[in-house]
Length: 359
Image 1 (tube, rainbow, N blue to C red):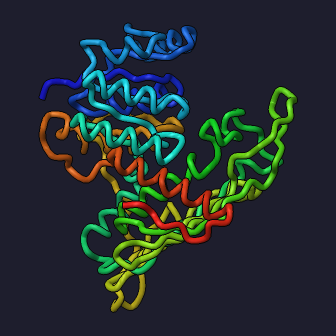
Image 2 (cartoon, rainbow, N blue to C red):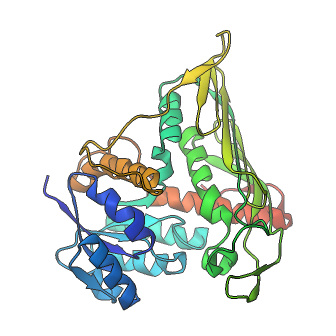
């Protein structure tokens, strides 16, 4: 297969994770970087050894040497950049969240479908060592008919004792909060395992309404730090997804999946699973899959995310040449469904109760 020429817009996450992930997969070639800040794109280009740069995304998406545009910018820019990429006839990869709202996400997904654009949303955590193994267990039929999924996340990121994060993280209008930043991955994984969700009820809250930043300014906080979502699925199963980032001395996640044929529990480091008729649960190995290229991902903190994204790209690569993905890769439709659920969760928390989801 001829290499796919890749252009990346955004040099934060784009430089830290996306460039090394694309480079770890045969069939991709990162050819250019784009950022609105000249100093940022120049610094990233020097570090990564990429010659071509731009600060004008409008001309960037039109470049003849780029086959695929990957959007890794702030979410406020996603809709405009995605629609321009589709109009330019390029393949599209967009970081999650796909857009600020379900309605904007739907516009992107439907526009891409009408144009027959090959596109994906970057929910790479399906390919983490833990979730890849759980996904394989589910696909093997070991769960049988699924009954219930529970995912509980906890961290201390917004506890008053923790150093402040970037200002945009505290602002809902800029895509901040942990429904977008953390639980979007959990929602995607629940849909991957259980299928179509039909209704949502939720409690979503902001625990501390003000935050002092590193520069001494105090700002109002309206993005969420704690949420519990209840999901009903078309097949009769259900899910409980909870997350809080205001717990001192807390860090980690627990997953439980129960069905007619088996049960699985995981704390992120160890998975135990077994059939309903077994004497108990036995260890289930984490996924040991690595990129087929054999690329050395190093020991940096971002290596796990680079590996997960590289595996997603590896499975997606055949689709970019008219083939079939090796396993389901998150589509723009998937990105829209996640944002639709987030919108419904917020509406529920504001008093709407159970909110049905449009098909």
